Image (cartoon, rainbow, N blue to C red; front, side, top):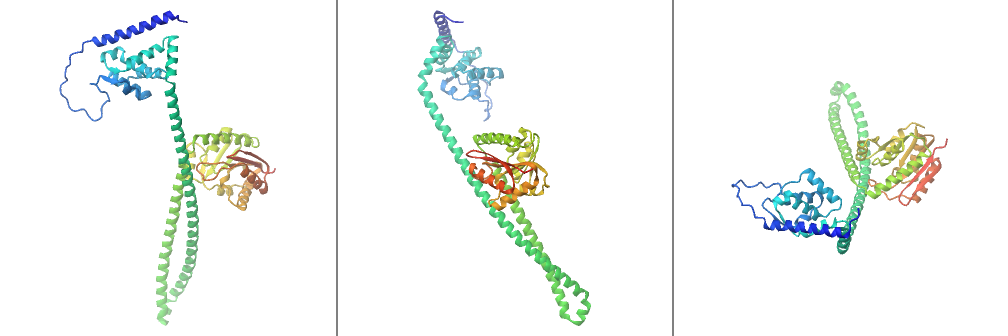
Length: 461
């Protein structure tokens, strides 16, 4: 309903008159006689945060906090009590509707309870009057526009400061991501070197153990022969008897040495397992920023559509190198019966806790154990492909063997936060498509962008 200018002026004058009358009554109100409380023990270090004896504040002291902290501080300062649920909810709804903090403070200060407490807030009255004036129809709209235009330079300055702060935080996050990537790459290279050294030393120790076991068998056979003839040897030749005694000592010493070697080998294997577990945990702890995660979800949805065009609905899909399980989730959302294998124990456990069917194991060994023509559809993280063409051909040959006739293989080339590898694009997709064709696959289809690609191929029927 429209309000005439005359009515607006009358309403404004009534509001002003009520505020002046309340202020005058507050000034003339006689203070209550002070009754000192009896002495009591010192307050504990932790109290309710209410300054019961303080009745004077500057408005800036109360408007600094935000949202719940602001409401809580206003109740404790103006009403000298903690906020009740209904009162706090009403004031928060007022803030959520765009009301000024001064209006909330004024509502509390000039409520019946606030008048009884009588806290003085310097600078609140004019701001409260303006906040109420803004609610007057038509006139309040004009006043609010004027106040907004007057405060526009301050708002712009705050906006520029906020933009600078956000840009600085994004820069720091990017630097931290690059540092994580560099540390992950160094750890992976160190783990690879340690694994190669462990394998070399393990092979050497096993060779030594085999040689010692052969020698031990020969010695034991010789000792047995000597023991069988011990009496004759002792009568005929004391030297032979002594040799038998020496051989026994040598056999015992050899047994002790072999036992020590076996313990050393076990310790090396435990150390390698510990290092791998720490490396897995570190790789799984590397975080992916929200934009990259969203882009990966969009790519996965597109790639599921690419696979769905060739594979039957609800088909069983085996994924090798499942990582954090994001690709398995996309397959399950598409309706596929997806299961996966991941060598990183921390990533596999995290995926299992989210209800995904991910087994911890070596993906290439899992593929080698698959029976011929037993897999309907196979997806593969391209990071598992060996660097040399011969090794890649061998792995793709195993995939061709395990797939059923007409079965699909989808290779994912994408950046993943827990694998230190450069992003893949159209050039890598063309190289992978050539590898698939050389391995015997047909009907190759590629979906690629600047950062990632998927290559789909089928086993000939």
